[in-house]
Image: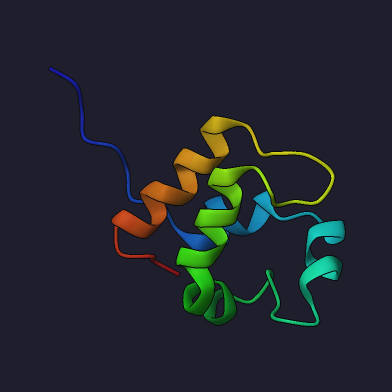
Length: 78
């Protein structure tokens, strides 16, 4: 029997995925280091990451995209 996955939180799991380069690239629209901004734009961020068009210097690994997807599906905890 497998144990259920632990909830994914923004501060501990999602925020560390965004590099300073990513943040600086997006500051004109929103701040990837602010929970509220990522929460407001989570679907668009996931769509771009899933398509491989974000970040601008290369796609995230599937495991990181899946982690973001789990965070959204799990209620987008802070």
